[in-house]
Image (cartoon, rainbow, N blue to C red; front, side):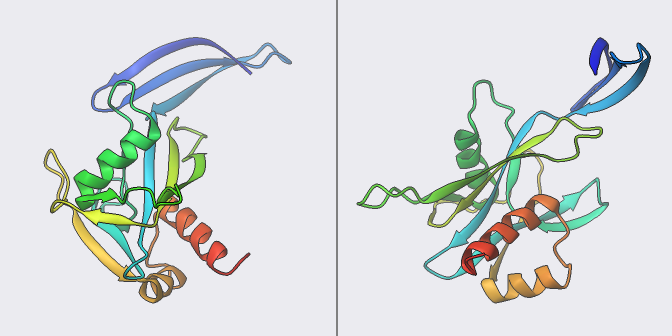
Length: 186
């Protein structure tokens, strides 16, 4: 498939583009629209000293409800790398920093990978991390009108919510599955 033309249909807080996509086998061209979201970062924050997770709870327009999810945010600062966005979002939403490296040089976060959210119509790629040692610095709660509640849950409470489908955000589910698989050596 080849993109032969691109037009911006909407350019507000987000962007929607229309593409003409040509099938080289048939020569036929058909229109496709894409929600151009860019890249983002998300992190499962595990406080290893207390055996708890820190989540955010906030209203999400896509679901039309408040959702419990891992902290996340757009890589919307020029030149920002995923690790930089991770640190910025943890401070803005949770008021925490990643603890300094241990004496043996071990970082207190792990990169799980990057994943497309919904590639059939959205360009967003999310970089997911697991953070396992943090230092509380501020109150958190978001910036620029965000109204974020910080939710702290034990591993057991989180597992119960997860098993009862009380957590329904895909990036959070992916991060929790990775955590619980590692915990159970799967």
